[in-house]
Length: 397
Image 1: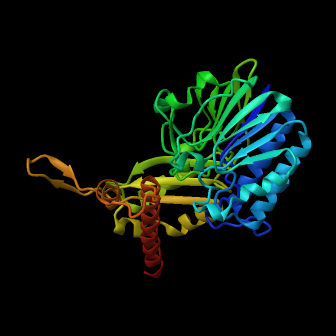
Image 2: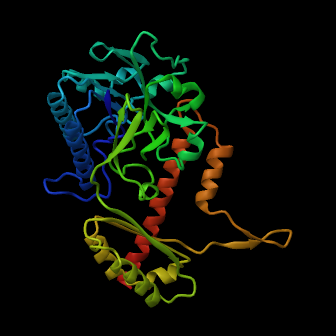
Image 3: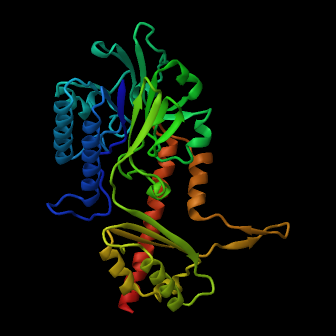
């Protein structure tokens, strides 16, 4: 049996406040296009079963346009593959905390051939395929109840569909960074992939094979909290052949994201920094137009930043979909009591240390890791605001 495994669609994702023709956010359109391209390829491959491992939407309450487009695309998939069941589970992004709120994913269950599991653990038996799919959506793993992760011995094929963070075993080496906070943690020893024909995972945004029959499909576009960590990886989905016991990754086109080589401004004049920025930009194949680009420059003082060629920087921002000049101040060093050089912790490090070691949540529902990630994002936005203020000052000077 050929299985198509998608995950982390994040439909409705928005970023950078740039609009595409028609008034839609440019990144929201990118994600929608990547999803359509993935479905086009799935339809070409003619799988007998389609699995979607959570985070169909980026938020619990997506926009009307995102909901309508998702419904149309799933309906198109179901119509093109009428014999192939489509099983969808909820991830942390599309799982409301309050039970009475209800999940928008249930709307997709109105499409013939689409099966949705959004709350409790549930085993689906697909009679035509003699296949059992044990569905573990996000809420099933965070409800505090013990979930028996066991295959159905009466079924010819057993599949585990799960949205969460796999820990232990090979996962410790292969999952190189936290792409998304807020996911439930499941130990590899609880999953026991050798007992399943296939384990389809969602939540980690980089396609990763944890075992020959256990894959993270990854996201279809770059929508994680740190897209710069994903630059070296393609986006797409996975197919798995249960007879050959072989998984295959299928990439889909996405918007280009670049992280230019960082450099230190220590000892450089503003003109030299401008020249270095210009040289790095001119080395980009095809230029910056429509791309997402970051350039980290360290050891930039406030005075040095004010003297940069901000007219040129504004031109780069206008040409790219998003250009982030990440100008970082010099690290402050101090002498500790033993006479050895030390480094004063940055404000970002102080905040993270407080949240991890000293702050106590007021409610058990508060996710500490998610809060740390949000704090880091807000600090970055605040720092960017300071630089924008300096840019305004330089224009008025």
